[in-house]
Image (cartoon, rainbow, N blue to C red):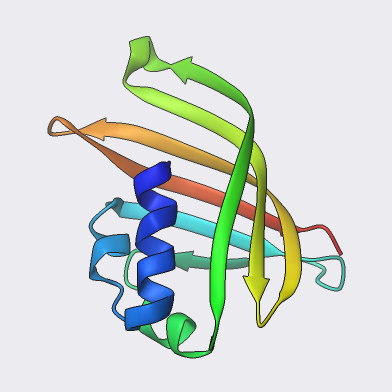
Length: 118
């Protein structure tokens, strides 16, 4: 998790998403929502991460883990927690669920669910 969030923080500065994408499974599926949406936005491995990064000036991510569950005999890990995206000094808290999977000896992000708290 530390490396993933550091990749995002580095990406906010460089506007380069290579390190983020390198941590994602090719079959990655993501879901993002907030209280104003009826259904979450869905995105996959090929979504425009550079476009996302370019939308932000000064930004950073931090996180707190609330629960970790191993699955599939330790080859998959479900991580629940809270992240805070600090954008131009304004915090945007969200709850998350990440599914990490061991693929070819490396942990890859298989799925993420992000729900903004507001």
